[in-house]
Amino acid sequence: KALTFRKKDGSLKGPYEASFTRDAIIVTDLQANIAEGDIIIRKLPNENDEYYYVTKVDCYSKSLGCIPPHYHIKFTQTPPSRPMEKIYRILTFMVHKMFK
Image 1: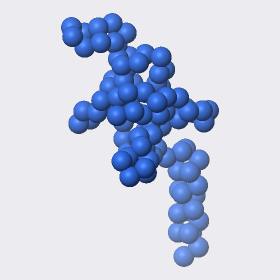
Image 2: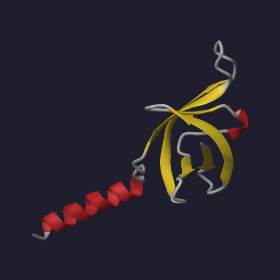
Image 3: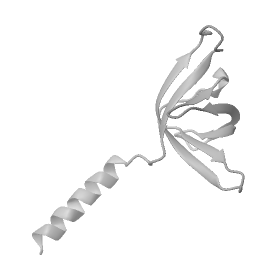
Image 4: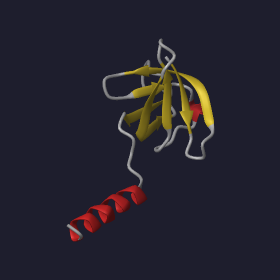
């Protein structure tokens, strides 16, 4: 599968060929420069986009036996909450609770 990565600055990188395991994505192109916080975009057969959020990246720059150098990417499909959104939700809850 080919994946595109949206970097924190909004730029898009890719597409890069990738393999999915049950809980990780493997990208063998070390030029991808994948980082925690990147958003992975996978184009589905129906032309919709599916999004994954990078939570951890390990870069193996040397071959491991028959496995070539690669990125081992942990991900979630749940978007991370932004700190300000959390604070806003807590304050809103407190204000509503105070005036009830």
